[in-house]
Image (tube, rainbow, N blue to C red):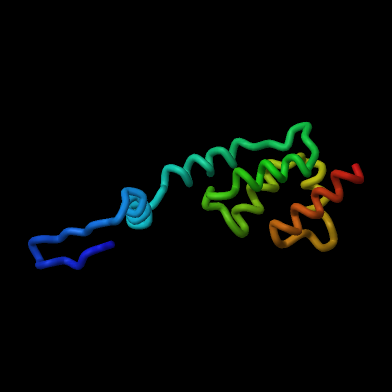
Length: 113
């Protein structure tokens, strides 16, 4: 339980557990290192010889907690997927707009390949 400041010179807070204190500390100062490591991990991915489904599973796992979302996440996905599938999706009459559309359509193309 947090206590209220007693006066201007004496500021103290108490917590019921170390876990509560660490959670409060992370909220206050952020967990930047974890996010940075996840972003680096995400940037290292490549589809290579894996199926799109396998690649997407790994991509989703790496993206979680990386700080990437929206357009930057889509750009990372496009950069890391095999070029032929990327080209076909980007040249489509109605290219995908959301990351979920990119996932679905990339898997469909990969299965038909």
